[in-house]
Image: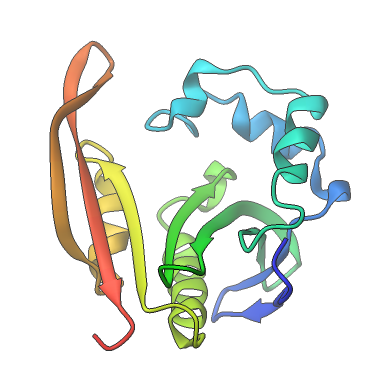
Length: 177
């Protein structure tokens, strides 16, 4: 993981680096829940503790960040955030998974996203954030737009979701925007 391992506090969430002890039955369950991964290519995989440990290990020695999203009120884990950072280009590609379906639609994802992306854009080495989502993932598209990201590109009919071609929408936000 990157040299800076932040603990960030939003209005509703606490974000901290994801650790090995965070790989529990709930986390593995999110990754194997068809509703949670409906719009992710994770839907084609089956996860276990070993696959999760390998993924966590992939962040070691990199600039990339893997964050645990926790409910601020009770420190309960509800999801994860990632940032794949290219220091050479000053970019970070961000992703989010809110795995606890009981908090969907309650603003936790937006708060986590805004907290994390504001922190990233405040760093000297980040000039641009990017993120992508399938056009049919309306919640993610709204989340990116509400955070001030602008549509940058569309890959028409790029993936198949539930038997139908779906566009991938790419959004971006610049440090000086």
